[in-house]
Image (cartoon, rainbow, N blue to C red; front, side, top):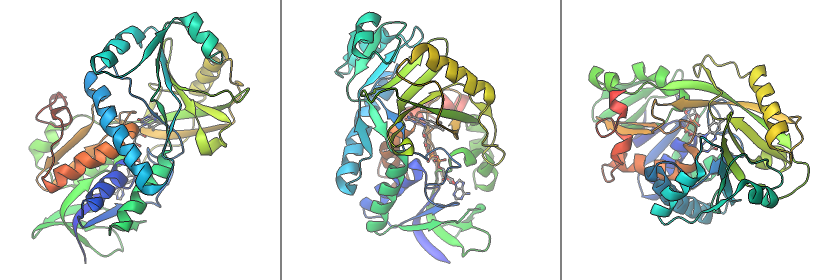
Length: 375
Ligand SMILES: Cc1cc2nc3c(=O)[nH]c(=O)nc-3n(C[C@H](O)[C@H](O)[C@H](O)COP(=O)(O)OP(=O)(O)OC[C@H]3O[C@@H](n4cnc5c(N)ncnc54)[C@H](O)[C@@H]3O)c2cc1C
């Protein structure tokens, strides 16, 4: 039997970050991943996720600052370029750029509003349909690189990584829990941090959680999202953007996945309900057509013929708030809802704090302190 103080199940962004934060604080930790690190079946693969400070809720906008500081620490400690700053644009009637500007101003975060015409002269690659909010700190997180950097740092601090190691069940045992994986040695851990992404809903029955806790959990909806990469017409510097108009669309430079030559464009809300084990990995043709039409209308700086496409899983709570809470010796971490990547190192820090009992999590992420427990 393998013995560890903290077992972290899942080595996507959340699990890698938790292992890094536990190991750098000197704790004995084992990260356990069912596939190879960097696999494409969950939520953290590929070279592009948006980092942005802009949120309609001051709570999240504030947390982006804490996350940004940790991204810089990760870059400094690992030497990996995990975050590339590009600046970000928010526009569209439903995005309400003026209201977003007020939220940022209340927190002392710099941003600037432009009229649609002025914005078009500055970023001619985009057809803006409303005022535009510019925020300079936004950029692109290289998710795949970040996962590897955090795991490398964790291992350099003594963590153990077990990959190709699917955990089938977690059962209570003397002073902790026994984690079983078919054909593998048992793992004994005092505390278990579950960062299983879209697999969490299917895993819940295999976790030793009281019925009352299970009933209190929010509904976790898994959807298969699709992302397309469109080639840039010229190599003008592209910002990341969020546009909430006729569609809810975001776009960002695609990074290494497309040799820096294409923008990743996707719908935030165009996903198909599925499960982690049942998803088909096929891009929905109707969603593809919607995005091609969108690019023709709003993104003249792109060629409207996708050069690459991919699917990815969102695991969303009804409020799109994260769930980070502790029940007995089990810490549940579900930080997705389509916007968790930017917070990854902070999520790891919060989860590590809950695991060790030395840190606190904002009430918004807990069952007792948030609206989550009532949903
Ligand atoms: C298309 C798409 C675009 C996104 N864009 C953005 C963005 O621009 N900005 C942003 O901030 N966020 C974005 N997100 C959200 C962000 O990517 C997620 O919040 C984040 O990747 C979630 O990471 P995770 O570690 O919780 O899940 P995952 O990365 O899925 O990791 C869970 C891991 O657990 C492992 N696992 C599961 N069950 C077991 C088991 N029984 N035993 C062992 N291992 C197990 C899985 O194999 C997996 O590796 C996006 C997400 C998607 C899908």
